[in-house]
Amino acid sequence: MESYHVIHIWSQYAIPNIPSVIFWIFVASGVLIQGISKSGFAGGAGIISVPLMMLVMPPDKVTATLLPILILCDLNAIYVHRKNKQWKPILEIYLPAIVGILLGSMMWWYMGKNGIQQFEKPLKQFVGIIAILFALYIWAREFSLKWVEQKSFGIKVGIIAGILAGITSTLAHAAGPIVSLFLFSKNLGKSLFVGTVAWTFTLINLTKLPFYIAVGLVDWSVLTFDIFLIPFVPIGSALGVWLHNKISERTFNFVIMILTIMIGIQLLIGINPIELLVKMLAKTPVSVS
Image (tube, rainbow, N blue to C red):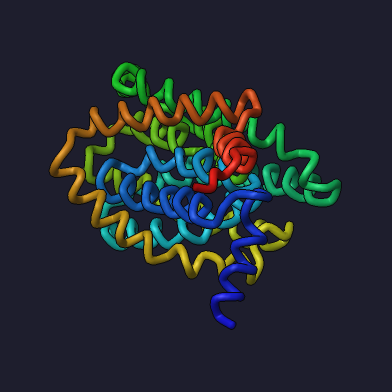
């Protein structure tokens, strides 16, 4: 009975005709990357989880599934950095982000009301564009941070950055570069910066949760499905610490950049290599010896 329940949950979340093994490999990889990124490489690379999981899941299911996982990761992060925070810059970007979260939630409500299926292509294209922009951000990160370091963004920039962060975070959990660049301009120092970023995302993701519930993205089935994914969070965290000691952040970011560009392009042009592979294998005749 329990195995039937697992299969039934999987069938609700997978793109049609995706084999269960492939589905679980990609979904588990997405959650593992979140743990690796947050524990070993400053968290930003976790954005690749969204386009990666969209190869085997509909966009709305990916977004809904990841939010409780992200909240768990965030709560762990603020526990570690419970003393490393500065409330003024947090509030400068978080309060306007509430407006962006509301706007993003209204978009999800509109799409749900009119049939989410007809919006899957533009949603994937949006995530593809965000993924490519993020890859470019990784490439230009050192230059960006040096440029931002000379600034000290004030309330006006905080309002714009916050609204954009709220919208992109609500639609695709993709506000990392926006929040990081804004807070980096505050010259907080490494420990305060990491802690302040962690607290900012905790507040943003916790604020998103009731809106996700209200528009029907997160329900009991999502939470039940996430139970099977939670074990991959500590595994990813441990793997992130191990990888941090084995490879440089530059090498890790380069690999993430290449993968993000590749997945972002395929989302943008609308060709899913996993679906194509499955169709090709289905048409391949089986030889009997």
